[in-house]
Amino acid sequence: MDLPDAVRSRLVTLVAASLSDVTPLPPALKQVAGFAPARRARLGAGAIVTELERDDELRARVATQVATRATGDAADVAALAWLERGDGWEDAVRRAAERPRAEDGARQDREQRLRERAEEAERALREQRRAHREALDAVKAELATVRRTLGETRSRERTAREEAEAARAAAEDEAARLDREVRSLRSQVARLEEQAGEQRRRTRSERDEVTLRARMLLDTLGDAVAGLRRELALPPVSGTPGERVEEAYAPAAPEPAPSGPTVQDATRLTSYLSMPRSRLLVDGYNVSKTVWPTLSLEAQRSRLLTVLGALVARTGAETTVVFDGADTKAPTAPAPRGVRVVFSPAGVIADDVLRELVAAEPAGRVVVVVTDDQALGADLRRAGATVAQVRALAG
Image 1 (cartoon, helix red, strand yellow):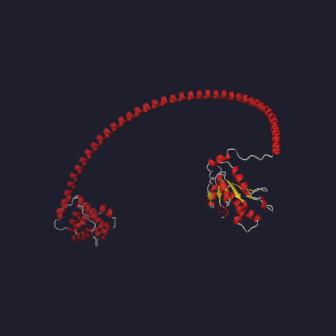
Image 2 (cartoon, one colour):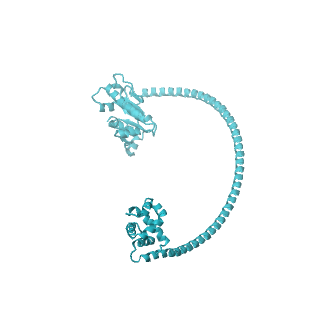
Image 3 (cartoon, helix red, strand yellow):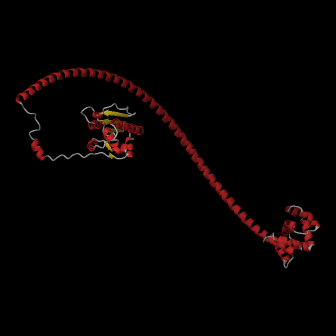
C-alpha cells in the first residue's frame, strides 16, 4: 500500500529520531544513523522506507522505539500503524490520507470567513478614514480660527503695550513734577519749622519769665501761709468734711488677687526665657540662701552667678540679679557675660529694687522673677510679672 505524503513524511521523521536507539541496523542504515536526526530525515528518507518495507524484524524494532515518541496526531497514528502492521492498519493509513482533504475544506471555510472579515475591516477602515478626513477638516478650520484670533490678540497686545508705554511716560512726567513740588514744599516746611522754632523759643522765654514771677509770688504766699500756720499752731489737715459719711456708705474695697502664672520646674523656666526679648530678675540672697545655706555670702553669690551664666548662654535672656547691699562685706567676683549684678543702696531692700525693675518694664514683655518670698511674689504677679520658684532655677 502506498503511503500518503503526510504519513510518509511523519514516518521518516519519527524513524530518523529513533535510529540511534535501534540495534542492530542493516548496513544501509548504519551510515544514515551517524547523521543528526534532521539530516537523517532529509538524506536517508528513501533508504529508511525501503529497509522498513523489506525487513519485518527491523520494522518491529523501530515500531517499539517510535511508539514512545508518537503523539495522538492522525499522521503519527498512521505511521505507527504502518510500522506495527496490526489489524486495521490500512484503514488508519487511509483515514490519515483523507484527513488533509477535510482539513482543506475547513481551511477554505476559514479563508472565506477571513476574507469576509477583511472586507468588513476595509469598509470600516474606509469609514474611519472618511471620519478622520472630516475631523481633520474641522481641526484645520478651528486652527484657522485660532490663528486669526491669535493675530487679533497680538494686535490688541501691541496696542495695549503702546498705551502702557505712553501711560508710563506720563506717570514718570507726573512723578517728576510731584517730586519737584515735594522738594519745594519741604523747603517751605523747613523754613516754617525754623520760624516756628524761633517763635517757640521766644514764647518759652516769655513763659519762663512769667512762671518765674508766679513762682516768686507763690513762694511769698506759701511762706506767709506757713508763718500764719505756725503762729496759730494749726494742725495739718487729714481727710475731708464728708469723709466720715462716705466711709459709712461705701463698700469695702476687695483686696486685688495676685495674677500671673508660677513657674515650678526648669523646663517651663527655660521655655519662658527662650521667648523673644525675655527678662529675668533674680532675688539674689533669697535664692542663694535657700540653695546653699551653709556657704558664705561671697561663695553663695559666686555659685548663683555661675548658674545664671549657664542659663543666659542657653536662652539669651536679659538677666539681672539683685542682692541686699547691707550684707556685702567683700568685693564680688566679675559677673558672667549677659548677667548684671545690682546691690540695693543703704536703707533699701532688694525686694523694693525688684518691684521698681518690674514696674519699669513695658506691658506685654515677658518678665520672670525668681524668688520664694510669697509677699514679694504676690506683688510682682499683680504687676504683671511671672514668678518662678527657686527650685526651677537651681533645683
